[in-house]
Length: 99
Image (cartoon, rainbow, N blue to C red; front, side, top):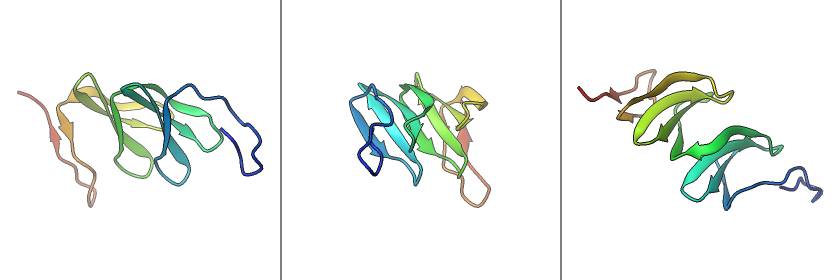
């Protein structure tokens, strides 16, 4: 990864890097993804099936067909318990759990 002056700031192990937000990037390796900041610091390891935004500081993550909620510091708020978590809208989200 290079900064604005094309100076190497980190070596990345992955197949693809995609913009995720203003300061974050999604790192993909095979079928898995992780999250890194603009300095190239890995915030979430490349072990998740999917990472999606939930709110400005919180993410929805999928692993082994279950969803959880996590913040950027990898503090799991809700571990992998749910079949689906909808995006947060007006402070409300739909969470589906199998009976």
